[in-house]
Image 1 (tube, rainbow, N blue to C red):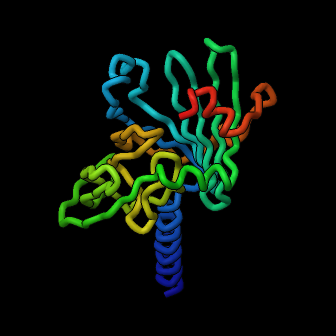
Image 2 (cartoon, rainbow, N blue to C red):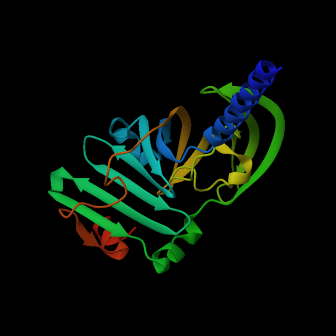
Length: 225
């Protein structure tokens, strides 16, 4: 009888621990997301298509996420903390010999509101497995540009918003295949892999060799756009 109770107790403990592990595994608090991307470039930028990367990497920890974009001409890191409404852009431009850091103030963010997409969603009955996660299909319309596309979300995992996924409410789940928007350019993104694990120290800050400038100064460097 004692042996049966011991076996039963152990079995219950294993089951409870397994349940806790599954529950906590859904919320990945630190790690990396790799995206395959396609850039929907306007005509004037199509000759430079080879300079746009086909893969983007996001590092995340706690409430912070950084999106790294690398090309032959520059490297940029977009750092976002959506809870604190903190946003910073790091630019490394070797051909200009410049490393620039821009912290977007609340006033800066207010100026950019009119450039943010306006999305509406319609859920469908379609589902499929993407990158090992069950995903639900939504039909999305970006109202400002009257642009229609599909987006696939999973509720198997939880990952904090980053620069690509910031336009999507967490209630739909984590976006696995979707369109995003960066500086007036539409990007089709698909999650290649999500990996839990430690990220390098300093992933969400600037090193001392970066020059701090304002958003207005950055816009002037970009021809005032």
